Image (cartoon, rainbow, N blue to C red; front, side, top):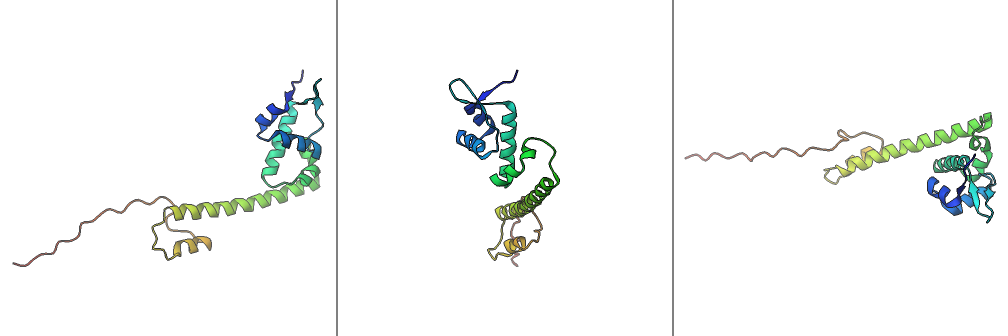
Amino acid sequence: METFLPIREVAAKTGVSVHTLRYYERAGLLPRTSRSAAGYRLYTTESVRRVMLVRTLRSVGFGIRELRGLGAVADLRIPTTAMRARLRTKRDQVSGQLRDLERAWKLLDALQGCRCRGDGVLDRRLLDGGETKSAGPRRPRARTRPKRRRVNP
């Protein structure tokens, strides 16, 4: 026997709002749900999986129109050639975003540990795609005593 979940439980499990669940249903991203005797929406565990998939695809940049076109993916069926091409294109875009984020991470990491003179050499080199000598945390320099001058008697 299949279990049904009320809309608030599905919202809590998936991390989307009740309003978003209703919107996904109106937009055709979710199938029509069954209703209780009082008229409340009741979702299946399959609907929860589908909401999670839609949420993940939305987080990587798919729009609502694109997701409607990827209905077979949301239904967990084998995607067509055209769908695979769209998924490949989106994967390539996400790959580019990851490279940009990695560069930003390195820049922030280097600037956080920077002991530069304020001449901007470090950040210019990083922004131009160059690497720094040390991307890791720096160790404090060992203190040296100043040399004592000998006084001739």
